[in-house]
Length: 434
Image 1 (cartoon, helix red, strand yellow):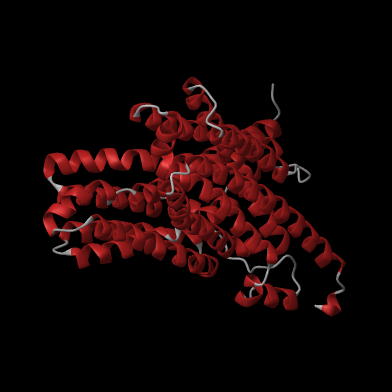
Image 2 (tube, rainbow, N blue to C red):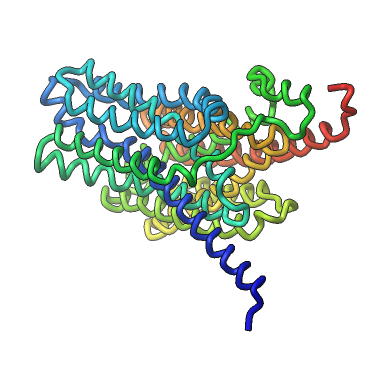
């Protein structure tokens, strides 16, 4: 018969598992909602163009506005998260997304749509700093890998569902009803976040690695934070990794058609294979991080380097255009798998760098700023790689993708090295010199 202590331990483990699963699900639902709103407007472009006599450039400006506002707002949202708490900010972000959809439904001209895009971008800006702060503060260390993995997968699911739902509603009931459907998605996500607010709240903590008031004052200074090399290295890492993804997301079908003379269906399927491979990699990467999360000696940067090195080599191989078309799909899937596998380790690496240098109270501002590199990469990538395609240099696009992966490898290794050296130097400083 089991002892009362053993029974209590098993019960505590089950409670912890249930709590972690609920928190991960809530954050995943919220993140999926943000990605859902990434693609609520593009499916409605044909209706906007007919209704308001708009050009492709004008409707494209709606998404440019969305990502510019989101990218700029994301860096500042992290500061707000650290000041007021992630749950409040996350609720505000979801509410803004729902309001943006209501604005779309009520729009009478292009200016109103433009305002709706800006409001949606502002709402979207809070998710990465708020989500990752909640994951790092509220999920057990032994389940962080699964949390990071689920976070990435939920975003992919939101991307997949949005065009299907928006097109179905717009075709059947009209574009204004489709916008109301998007608002309902946001309202449901907000209701769940408010309903389970007790699980997502935590005690606010200052950004500090010890109780030294002088050091705490220095680390909570925004100017000191922006002067940290490790923060900008992490920003560069996200920029490079997203540059590669942006090239494939925007241009994979025409790129593969020109290089390998495949059909449009096969070229589009290759992009789908890449995304499915990335999703599979995210799942596997979560297990890898989980197995090593409690081991402070695990070098996540080495896993990132190995996974992205394989993806870079595959990109260079595709650039040669010597492969039979039979191999295009599996190679695209393997390249995506490598990128996905590195995802949870990437988020764990940023967590360790933040905790080592600034403490838990700085998760919001660090994730906010470094993930702004994602928006910058998505904004720059279509321009850079679009120029290469316009110059009829498709092979160089894959070369650029491989080089972007290599850039991500070097910056990931630099993040790990820099954060480790900073932690050592701070520990060696006498208190009086601070």
